[in-house]
Image (cartoon, rainbow, N blue to C red; front, side):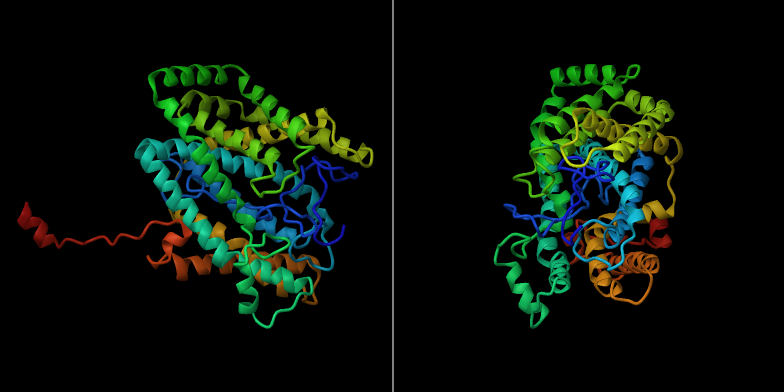
Amino acid sequence: MASGETPALLGTPAPPGRRLCPDLDVASPSRSLPGPVHDISIADTAAFSDDGPMETTNRRHDLDWLRVLAILLLQVFHTGMAFNSWGWHIKNPERLTWLDMPMSFMHQWRMPLLFFISGVGTTFALRSRGLAGFVKERHRRLLWPLVFGMAVVIPPQVYCERLFSGVSYSSYWDFYRTVFYGVSYPQGNTSWHHLWFVVYLFVFSLLSVPLLAGMRRPDGKVMLERLQNWIGRGYNLYFLILPLAVVQVSLRPYWPTQHNLVADWANFSFQLFHFWCGLLVASSPGIWDRIESLRRLSLVVGLTSLGVLLIDDFLGVKGGYPSPIEYTLVSALTWSWILTVLGYGKHYLNFRNRFIEYANEGIYPFYILHQTVIIVIGYYVVSWSLGPSAKFLALLVASFAVSVLIYEVLIRRWNWIRPCFGLKPRVKLQVVPVAAQASEA
């Protein structure tokens, strides 16, 4: 596969060994698309908020853990993109093709899981703020970091890619002014790259305001409760595979993943469904309990669908679009693994410690930074005279350490920069002397 091409997986004509993953969300310089295009990734106020997804006395620490772990997994995923056989912004000359299959598998449920958790967080954010406050908070936590990211964080990624592909500039600033020409990537240098997730979460949040308002009315509450009761009975959770399959069968062959918002209807609908599932499930303890009790069955369904797809992958005929059965299997894989992760997470991860308290605030800035750090460091690492496995490990460790260091030294401690990464200003606690407390008493 030539550099810059996206792997044609479940959604575009696919060669054998490439059918497990629907057209990966990787920015492809070979595509000409309207609007900003970008590669794979993540962010939200609900999925990555300093408030956390649940502002309630009964905080769901398991969802805190899952979103943090999903982003850390993303760090591994994007590091792997420089070494596997798919096209990306920078590529190591020697490929680690063994990464393809586990990365394809992770890709099936990683992003939908984060959209689901974002939907849960949206419900709780609305409870504490009301509709007007909710919309204002979405602008603060999503729109401003997006603008800052497109102007400051993303350009170094595009710059390194241009240098890697042989384009020369007299300086970074010579390149940087082209970012504001408004010509979208890949033809130009204006892009939101991995911040597509922020864009989609912002749009999903605004689209959901009428739905959320309806759910607060008396008749809306009755309908919601009936739907929740039905989903929480028996094995009805697995019926939600069907609408996912309908989206895949009806839209995916015609709308491969672009992440440009205007020509991405399959991916848009697929992720919106998971976001709305999060809205639906958030306030239903019965559904959460059912997800937990079905965790073993969900794992069996997930492993079975994965196994069948791998067999189909091995026996698949070269070329052609996947069949409706294959699309349904991918939908079953996605939903069952989301239920598996949620179920086991609720059972084992509903606790807090100092790490998760620290990570809750830092994971959103980490997400915004991580891919830029990977690409900038990776631009140099791929030219080293080392084996690909050693370079992969070096890039993984170095990019993680640098991202954490930037957050800790340049973002976390300074109120003037925190809003650019979706964080509230730090409030200094005033220490009242013991003597003063005694006198007031």
